[in-house]
Every structure is written in C-alpha cells, then in structure tokens.
Image (cartoon, rainbow, N blue to C red):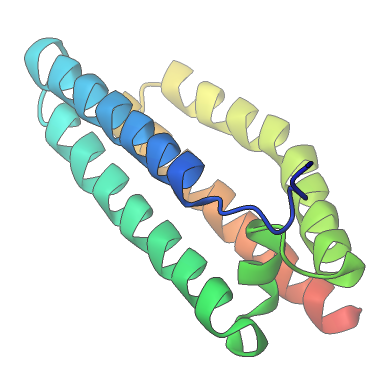
Length: 142
C-alpha cells in the first residue's frame, strides 16, 4: 500500500529539520563568539533566534488559519496559489537585480574609508527595505 505524500504526517521530518537548523545556528554562533571580532557571535545568535521565532509564527499562522495568513506568509511557506508565488518570485527578482549595485556601493564606501561594520549593516538594511518595498508594490499592483 502506497502512502500519498500530501496526506502523510510531515511532523517527524519538520522536527528533524528544525533540530538540525538549531544545532547549526548554535554551533555557528559559538564559533563566532569565540573567534569573530566584537559582539558578532551574540548578534548572530540574537538575529537567528528572532528569525526562527518569526518563521515559527508564520508557519503556525499558515497551518492553523490559512485564510488569515498574508500573501507573504503563504508564498514563503509555499502554501499559496500561483498568484502568491508569482508575487514573491517577482519581488525576489527585483531584489536580485538591485543587490549587485547595492553591494558595489557598499564596496566603494568601504574603499573610501567607511567603517566596514556600518557599511555591511547598511547594505543588509538596504536589501531588506528593497525586498519589502518590491513585495508590497508588486502585491498591490497584481
């Protein structure tokens, strides 16, 4: 008797993936705390913890109340329809197009004497803003 993969219980696989991801995050964070300059390890661990909480909340919302989930939540968890996936794909394409010039600007700023930490933090912030703005605009227009 074969099992339909759509109706099979994904809980053991999801739990294993979460445990592997958690182990990798902790190991990377501890290595950064030991060998990286400043508070890089602590920042990595805090950022990773925040991201994991956000992903868990998103997954919970999509699984428990799919009708109340946002377009981004449905697209990111791949539970939405083709419109949700198209919006995310187009927003990521815009981000990909602008990532290279943004990285070039950051490299030039570093070359001209800007603090590396600040330039990279602003690069990351700019990429998050571009991705969010692209998603919002494309979602609104389609």
